[in-house]
Image 1 (cartoon, rainbow, N blue to C red):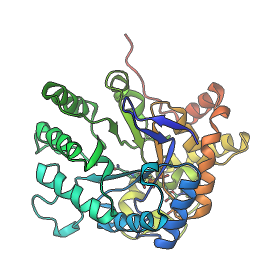
Image 2: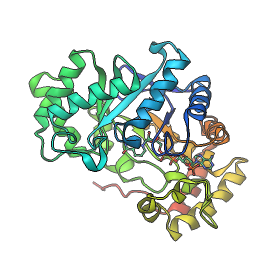
Image 3: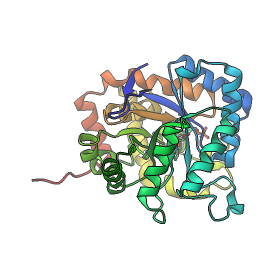
Length: 329
Ligand code: NDP
């Protein structure tokens, strides 16, 4: 396994990691979660990603139960949670979501209880909150770090400007700024990682824990002909995701990419994840899986990098036809 330093922070993350969105509680039960986390850990994965909103708290509870039975050395792995959406679903009342000091602090305590942990290694603001002053967020996160409840804090789906504002506030007040962002990044979604954040990578040295490297499975080729009944896009309630993710254009591109994968003697999911890792601004790509075979296959992406030559990357760019255009000087 390869490990990368998270931006300019001291923390090292395995270049692929493991997350629980949609899967834990909704698709898989404790036994399989235990097996998947075991495969991940044994392969060298040291980061497990979670959030208060995943299965409305049940995902954190499941991960907590697995971690408890595993008995792994707590210093050998990194666990995250994220706050913003709350976990009470339709019953959410004011102060039970967002990035106020009250919710960030209470959500941290609740996540620790559900995960059965003493501290979170990473704590993310799951989205920006336009109703809360950035000073309040930075102060709260700094306080949680000083209380030993979290070790690092980060953002998810924030703009470069919002991240920079947090840094300015932190520097001005001698507080601790965000060191990591969690954006969507995959062959279909490139703008933030390959354009918007470039300056931040250079200046503040932002780490990234990228999500949906397979575009929710579209970049496995499994949706080429129909929607398999045991797949994410067939889950009732996820019609919105199907609408957002499954377009004719993407299926055509995925089909063409299958050929590139074959030429490299590999599979499309391995190629798609390897392509993300080829970008050195990616600290870690968070994998998701509902079957052992999926995770075992996806782990092979780490070894693909030497085969991703400039020629292969150009061929992929021609198929994708979505390389961000950078400003010319
Ligand atoms: P992917 O895009 O990689 O999708 C994973 C899903 O694709 C699996 O659950 C499985 O679904 C299918 N799949 C995976 N590998 C294969 C394979 N080899 N062959 C066939 N099908 C496969 O990642 P996720 O969307 O799951 O995101 C990963 C993690 O990122 C999440 O768990 C979460 O931790 C984080 N995340 C963060 C977000 C944020 O806002 N910060 C938003 C979303 C995710 P199935 O079997 O059901 O088809």
